[in-house]
Image (tube, each protein chain N blue to C red):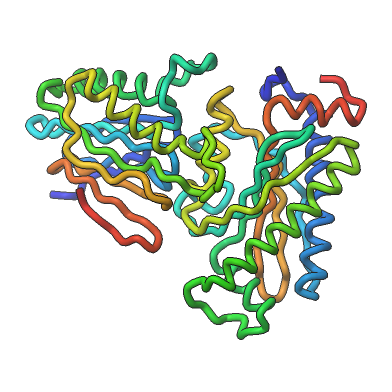
Length: 164
Length: 205
């Protein structure tokens, strides 16, 4: 039954979609945020690995997958093309860590936090509910989104494995 | 503004030479510190898309110790000293005169030692670069993280993400033969700093 299950990798500043029984994964999330979307009825998933909060603040914004706002919009569109229904889509978030403990918490160092806030804000605008999240702290995360049931498995070094 | 994609072979060769001189000094410092011979590979100038970035350090999930420095002054950017987890253990074991193969969680003392090693090596890297270019370069205090390579590299990557879709880094791998301490020096100059570095050496961009 699992024989044709594929693991689809999503790189940094990248996004992709998958249908049951495939798995979406992104490795080594640091200050970036993984936005995992899921339609539980159609069993369609989408995953974006965003680096920056806001495409409108950056001149060079041709890579839409790089930003929380544009990546989420595209991801929803791609999922709808595959048969997902927007009203059914729910979201889970992971990442947005502060990898290095800088004393002078300048703008760069708070980028993780800002990425998480931007993800929440665009999802709210789109009417998509964030049902679980594992964000912040100071460690990296590898995440896997299972289209089987929408579970998001989070793996870390030294901070265990969890499922949200 | 310098466009990364428009750098020619001459520019890249110069950046490579900077890696050579900087890492050469740093490996000499490391060699003195541990009283062992340390070899250095030919530096690479990598221009990478974000999605391929973490492959340089053995894959995005490879556990590494990264010591990060903010670089300011006339050249801005970041400098990183990265060790594979195993190598970091071996290196502190050599320094602390413990059994080389001893592996336990990093103690506070180990972390402090790694910070200081990073500090010494980054300083020697950057001071040779400063002498070469006659530009003032000031590293911050060291910031250490022990985590997945991808997560650690996300920090400089995000800086680059603000101005483009690629990262330029000057990577030099070094190795201490017998005990296999493998690590990397990574200099990630801010986009604006390329022009300064190149023109300080008499090359127009």
